[in-house]
Image 1 (tube, rainbow, N blue to C red):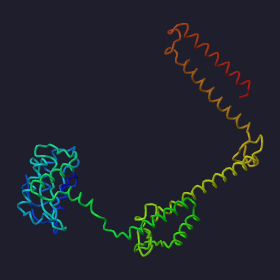
Image 2: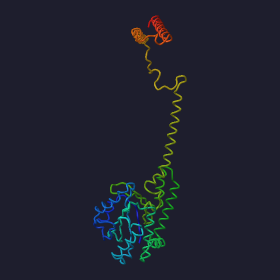
Image 3: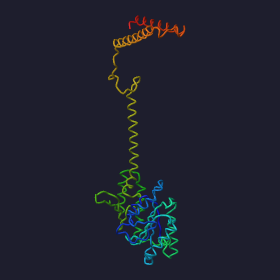
Image 4: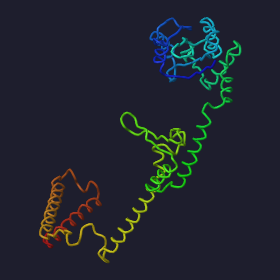
Length: 359
């Protein structure tokens, strides 16, 4: 017997799967549940799981595999007892869970879908939960004198290979020839690729392309001495795409060298064309456009600006003089009256200078 456990988020999908027609065998247990149908069971579990909003994977999916030689020994009642014992040793007494058997495969197996949130709002710890499930399954197997998964795996490791020795010898010969030729012509571009295929054909090794229904190549097939091998059996380097990459490396290096040579030649030609004193110009001097200076327009603009400034100064003086008693220099002292008088004199001097320049 073997046990597996994993935390999942899609509880409704898992429940629909284990209750699907054609797969469902026996309904073993409904622990802390009143409902018997998948949708109602999910809604009942969701009421409890909604108390914890931080947990993402709120369900547990557990699978218990029964060895073929143990199926005849175990009745439905014994399977129910094993399920309850498994859930108890996994610490699911205060959790909601449902267990059923499946009959869709050759080996009978048990599915358990459990609510990870307990009835008290506690989250089930899933640290090394898969190892925990395997250990519990092994303990129950020893107690019930059932087949242990570890012992079956240990026996399979010591079994002799099923492949014929003649096929293995032929495969080793093909591997030796292919790897020797790949090391010889690797990184030599298209010529190396063609020589690689020529040498293989010379050694009576035929390569065929494997195509799908749409006519696209998806792999290679090697034939030698009446034996056929897939490219993956010979080595990773001999797949359809990986074999081409082994010869494309040299082509990329060659193209880089040609590009660098072209750049150096272009730089030399541009340096020779540039004359001393002229510098690098985007537009030739003969085609460059220099806008003519218009002295009349600039003088007219300056005169208009001066007129606007003088009118603004005059308006300010009129506002100060017309204010009369509102702005009395004497109320602020002699210093304030002196500064106003000096400012007025400076403005008058500026007006005279502008008139003298003809602005």
